[in-house]
Image (cartoon, rainbow, N blue to C red; front, top):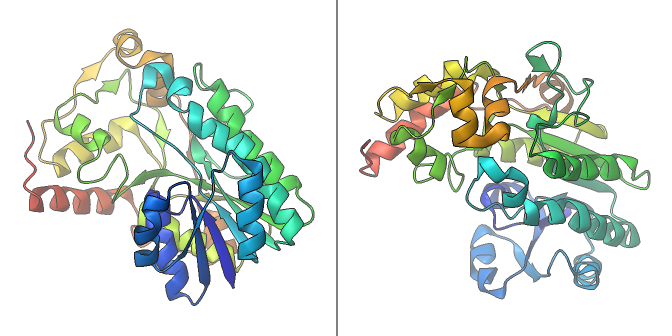
Length: 321
């Protein structure tokens, strides 16, 4: 099939494009910069240039590429700032609102038959049990400071699922780790854990779901090729509380155990948003993705993945401060 990947040079795109090519698809990789042409060609894609926030440019590249499937992976995530979360995600939120609208409009005009979009598990309402399925309430009660970000994620989901003219699939990815992510060998979150700047706040009861970036890419290839329209949690097999996974990560990285701070101190360090994510977040079940997409994560649990991450950090000469 002919597939257009929007956001083809990001952490996900670098994993996804070569997998789609290896599966026999003709991939057109959309980037905002002509300087990324060589990277995209190296990944096996046909480079196309468009600013996702310019509707006429998006319409042009979609019309010229004539894709059967569009994969929406547009983000612009910079340094993480938990105290000002929505501000840190402002550009990504525009890509998730305006960019989504432009892609959908162009895809409809081009007769695209399948549209796959990125979402994020952390929008589940923080009520009830610790692990959520796709049928649980999502995005109706965002953490303070994440209102704009969660609203943008909801916009992606609602718009794609409402597009009756195509087969819309939304992938609620877990927290990424691996190459080119913030939890990669040289990522900012990895460095924060190594330097004991990532504490357990309060009881550390917030439940997180992770997925290795390569496993997320494999699930996305599956979503391009199969699966009924709808929402899928793309996460590993073990949702876990911060108090459980953070010490394991620190040990894997050869770092000292993370500090524990009261919730009040956590608010001063990470703001209310970070504190809520550390203490109240709900994880997600991958049962539907396993069943509906025929997908199984190679890194069944973050325990395996974090051990691998630690080995990579040591191989590159990293040493905890």
